[in-house]
View 1 (cartoon, rainbow, N blue to C red):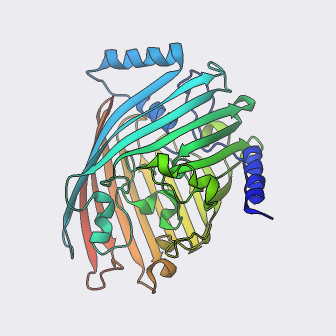
View 2: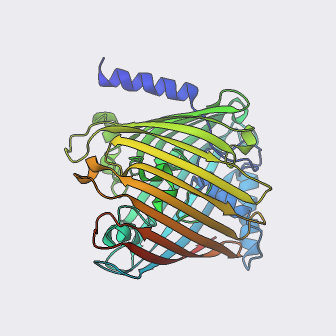
View 3: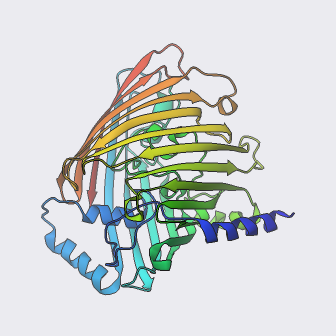
Length: 414
């Protein structure tokens, strides 16, 4: 069977069978249709920012924005985030800092006021470093396999999202297609955001065992198979470059080198899927023309639940066979604690990881990571997050036993 035929069959399966993976609060369109995806999916991010229960000096600005949403289904935001990191020891630089500005939003153009809306979703960014080593490269600079604040690079201007999102069957089915970020809908949970949650990638998408591609053209969909069982799936381009999207947009259709994923999960009810679910994610990355990018596949298991309206414990694990992932095996456990929704958040995570020998060319010693953060919501739209990490057995620096990393993150959103 030709590649094109295989792709068509997979797409048909995806569109008919895949399901939402998040959200329960009323949406930007005023309906109660659930939002799928993770905390950085644009519509979820807009919703969570709007739910922050803190005073602001920009009350009229937010009221004007709410009016745009109510009258025209048009929602948007601009935010700026900055991160500073320091380590107690390092074979290279011991300081790193960077920032980014983002403009993002969604516009309900079809079915506004119903649970079957169709929306244009976008996000454009400028990512810049303040130091010679950007935060995204800082953990490797410390001799440790992993990523701290992976989006905070020095890439400059980039396109992160430009896609169409369509809900069907009263919101029980969601389809999307266009230029997207696979981490918005693959193996997600509520604390995965490097802007508002954990900083270390060990506590994010795939717990470092999932060879997730950079932003590019993709297709995904999701559906509730029953009142409690959901399924999610899709595929994304492996060869895209978000800093030159106009040059790489067509590679999805010409190179046929894609990242595929399918996820099945259980939740008590659809309106609790974002905070309360167990899911299994299977993925496969095609072999690529670049010999340094091998094919591979893997599996990830995630459990999270919401207790007493305050606690969010989680257990997440992953395994990979090739694919260029950072880790071959990884397990993360931890919790989030937010005594008052929309206010301050405490997070603690512990991780064990076995570096992927196919990626590094040899066996490296196991690594251990601990992270503690406290997000202090100063006002609506402004948060500051002190962060402490302890990296044990940095695998790329056998002479070091451990590294302490201190971080501070600031985010302002309007």
